Amino acid sequence: MIDTHAHLYFNSYDTDRDEVINRTLSKLDMVINIGIDEKTSKQAVDLSQDYDGFYAAVGLHPEDVSSQMSVDISWVSTLCQHQKVVAIGEIGLDYHERSEVGSKELEDGVKKKQKEIFKAQIENAIENNLPIIVHSRDAFEDTMAILLEYKGHITGVWHSFTEGYEKMQQVINMGFYVGINGIVTYNSAQELQLAVARVDLSHIVLETDSPFLPPQLNRGERNEPSMVELVADKVAQLQNREAYDVVSATDTNAYKVFGIERPRL
Image 1 (cartoon, rainbow, N blue to C red):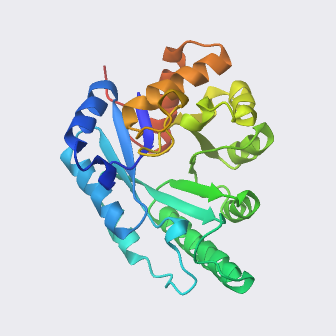
Image 2 (cartoon, one colour; image 1 turned 60 degrees about the horizontal axis):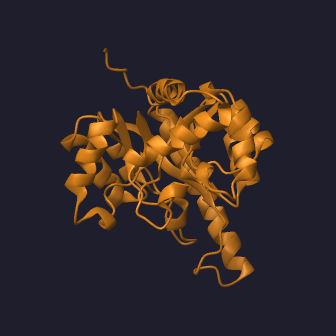
């Protein structure tokens, strides 16, 4: 079983990180820790060096973009040369209300800079033959418009997908996999559940976004990669399948999109 999206470097794990990692590795075959800036990207790389089965993605999260920021993100190019870096991410657009946005003019400036840095990181991924991990919040149309510019040249995972079936198919038709996490277990996620019930398993991967978005049974708790099992169970329920079939298919997708050789049994 694979968790394609976690953040085990966050300080919420500082008191018991070793325990969480041991629990993770006793259940899962692979975890990809995803950076959100230069510091955390380096931490994700460090974790990948310390543990078999751990890999890393490096990139600048759109929430960390300011309107005055330089587009120079040369550190991404440097870090992605590491042998266990398998993607650039998480990158994308985030138009959710932010404390920095005090006026429409500033808001437009932040959006413009997010787009510039998103494109720069996509181009970096293409140059280094890596997939990307897309973060898109309240920005579906603009995210799709940018991906369309690079269609056929880039692939990856649309992280934490929450939309309905029509938009899911748009993402799939763009050549991307859809990341399904604990949100699919929420009672409020009926539109997403209907989409997951219909989608072919060849187009999705499983993730947790740990320490965020714990499954319904663990709402209010800190999430961790081992809880991806509950995501698999929910997908299996929605598709009237065995959980084993969901895990087998989504693991295959994860190995494929991230270019990792599947261990021989």
